[in-house]
Amino acid sequence: MLNTKLTKNLAKCIWCKNAVVLRFKPMAQWNLAGDGYLCGDCYQKKLAEYYLTPDRRNLTKQSNRNA
Image (tube, rainbow, N blue to C red; front, side, top):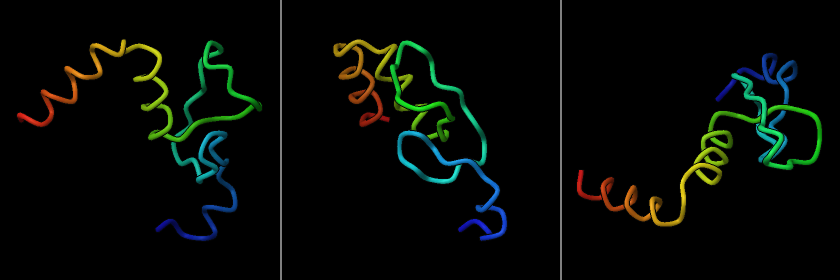
């Protein structure tokens, strides 16, 4: 867990509202409300939603299960 003194100064993720340690700027195409930053987890999820087609998502999930 992050130190409470650190979390007071950190920005909050505009998607999940958790503290943002490393800031990621959302792409304009994502149409996220608000002017702020995403945390790493939300940024990764939004990138996957934007770039991976539904067919490729299934392939990625299958390859992760086999690994």
